[in-house]
Length: 429
Ligand code: EPZ
Image (tube, rainbow, N blue to C red; front, side, top):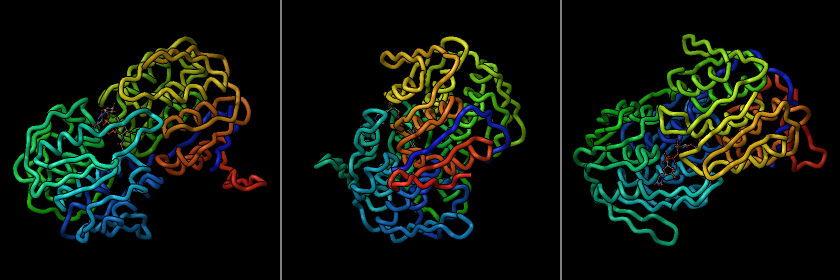
């Protein structure tokens, strides 16, 4: 295990380039293996261990997947032959359940381990399974696996419970090669869903309505590989917005789609931050002290659950009390770690009440999940002294060059390899 050391107290200043969206990339990499002609070449794929895991899963199933010297990811799915996904790979990451949609569509059968619970609570896949069943698959749950088969998936009218992002994407993948038309009602509207739909259409699929509540997918016989560039990561961008905000910084975020961050931007403006929208960029200028804000997480276009933790971290130093309600996941475990840094937070069921304190103090803290890691880093950037974030591998699942980007903005951040006795400092500047 490695740790990230942050010596806080410096306003972030300068500019930073936002990477490609992790959650789009994970889905698009799997969807690329639907093609039986040509190869897909994907640009703007973020480096992170989750992306590495999904590539491993595809290779294990028989697809050819490799990065070229220009960091473009090549995927050829023609030789996909194995319908059993590896437990050791799938258990690392929930998004690997997209392989179920892929395998059903391509091979007519799929055996995929059920993802377990994780640090953000129980995360079932019952909505995905209900959808596959409605499309004619016979599904059995045996020995921790979902075993599904369908000679030919058939188009169906499916109501997507809770506008689930993963279910919408998995069913779009499965329906692209199904017989007939699938209609997804109450579909997720997240930008990542739209990105996957645009990619699928580029490959020859017929997906209409992505970004609205009703998506129609007319199945086609085959798909072919294409070149495609992934959208910028709105959650990474939002994380840097909150990091700049808590430190009283002045930061230019490059390669951002401001539209994807409409509600977080409104909330930051309410907190007293000045945000200027440019062409593909956002400038954030923060006051010395933020004002408190109340927020409820909601499916897109509402405030994203993946920015709830960065927001709570920023509100720890606000001038007053903020109330944050989490409606998507059980996602407040990390507040115990913020409390160890001096934050005043009470949680009750899905609500956190954050009383702003004048300062946070450094402490060794434990990263429990990806976005919790971002929140603790944000708190560490504003805390007095040396904050030690343990379990940085979790942060590196989804943030590309996190420490480097913060250093570029003037933060004192470095990584220590805690396996090495003398705690050799990695990449210290
Ligand atoms: C995606 O997860 C993202 N992951 C999550 O990002 C994100 O927090 C979430 O969408 C919400 O925006 C990826 O894209 C890889 P859901 P997903 O299905 O698809 C319940 C991050 O940090 N549900 O929209 O798994 C579920 O428990 C991650 O980058 C069922 O009950 O989320 C939740 O309460 C974390 N049964 C709600 O629906 C199901 O079969 C919405 O979840 C599916 C979901």
